[in-house]
Image 1 (cartoon, helix red, strand yellow):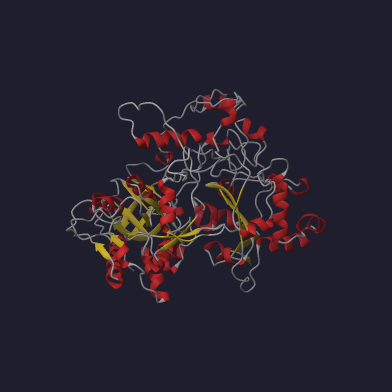
Image 2 (cartoon, rainbow, N blue to C red):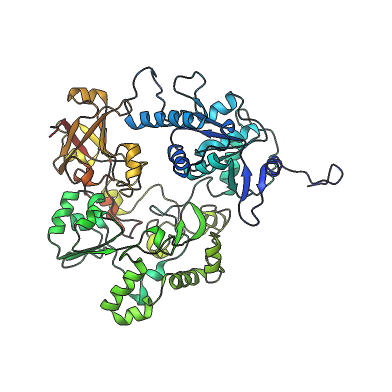
Length: 603
């Protein structure tokens, strides 16, 4: 940039706002910034207000805090009662908190009420030069009005309520020059999306995922200590047994299953076709479970090895969502007899194979992390130069490309597809695309035989098992926003918010035809199993479809082992054309399930 204004360095709008609102410089860490406007809604604020109450704190600047009901407001007639009890309660709690702490609130009957990111500009609350925060990911849209806006989490909402400040790292700046005249209909939003997609900034464009995860560090050396290869068998074969079309590379045990060693997996809740799973369990000699709480799976165990929680152990954590490595450090000592996984594996190996234990397992958690950093380093490796001391000080960025542009080498250097999918060897996954190019047509014999040369619509498989005339409802079992699979389903605080019991969402016409009202006991069943829960009649549900969120524990139902009594373990043969564990291997049709629903006895 050139020097102007008597030699003063020009500043960007972000720099001007940052300097104006800086309370305390972070000296290498986050800066403490003053917040000009805090927008609050009913979903991310209840726990924050509760934190203030428990700590005996007040809202620091109620005059700079503005609340509106938003996410749970009906889009139709607001004079009608709100049937969703969770939505209704969240609206009530925001009204109670606004009154308690003296905060301005636009309630459901206020004509100014609206989407939290819209009312700021509409009412003149959003102005250039402000720092604005809200407990929602869309808050950055206020930047269109010259403000600097951040979406924040619930703990940060509490921090801002109590202090009117928020810790933030100073963002870096980059100058972009877009030359020429945009065509008609092209706006600034289109331009920035094109820029993001072109430069490949993390969070923009798209990422390369392998199965479920994008793996950045090669962990394959840890899978096979001393050359002993792990036999990875998809869990669906444990539930269902061999299939006629099972790929020959699947290392299915010749003599079947004799025992189960289950670690940190609530398998007896989360496995599909759970009644078939229980048939397998009856033939086992021994079940061992490692976990930190009394799950349904733990209750079936012959031996339970109590493990530490996240707050009691040292571990190395990463995510496919960003390129940083982080050290998980204990907040408290292990409680009772609980031990870390490393301790458990070491003690087991000392008894099973003392020689191998001495060679590979006589290390503690920190030594294991150092060894992993060294293994992933190498010449230009992703962990090269990263030390344990650095991780103790905070997250460290892996040595991976920035920007991380998918398929760059394949496009620019004409390297054959696919790129390596860690931790599998390249030759394993290269078999998926024998042409070495992105394939939209599969010409191998098996794809032709199965009629799957191109993505092809098939009627639901379960229609061949359950005649739609007899089983007219499709059962959906999506993830819940209140838990991660079955984790936190037993959290008492969350249960206070969402009601703590499994509900079957059903459309009004389907409910009326069965004499069902919200709150009624209902039975959901098909030929694989049955559960009893509670009805929730909802306009949002499509006729002919019912929804029962996965992850509820059996003890929370009126009866039954959980929703996976009804799901199928049938394997699509196309999933067995190749076999590379967790990449090309059988899964199941979680949403391919037919059922029937009836009103049940309250007894």
